[in-house]
Length: 135
Image 1 (cartoon, helix red, strand yellow):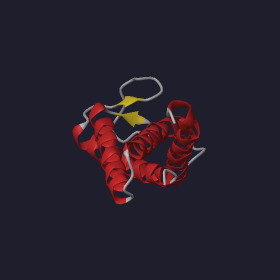
Image 2 (spheres, rainbow, N blue to C red; image 1 turned 180 degrees about the vertical axis):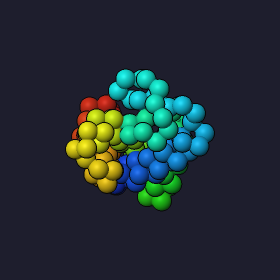
Image 3 (tube, rainbow, N blue to C red; image 1 turned 90 degrees about the vertical axis):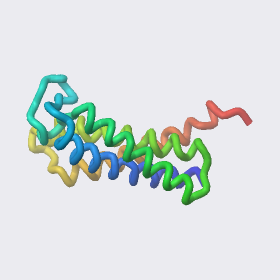
Image 4 (cartoon, rainbow, N blue to C red; image 1 turned 180 degrees about the horizontal axis):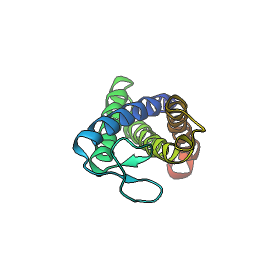
């Protein structure tokens, strides 16, 4: 049943990316580049604001919670899918600041890779779960 956390992490990342982008541009003020922490214009690839990041984390948590309830999962499912979503959110900004800014990737490719990274991160957490859970 915990394998569903992998797909749920991908959904959480997609929601987190959307919420952070849209709400961050409206409420975030002057964002900073993830790679240099220098102030940049809102909407720049790789730009992050505190408000946008918090909105993204909240969106990931809401999707992870809704999915956990729908699958009747437990706290492990929630935390794995939420962590995957947040990881993907940060990875999206890193890809935007590096590969997208150089023109090596477009936004669709960045979104695809960041969603995939959320699932891969969740799968990695699942693989290491037996090391941390007694039983």
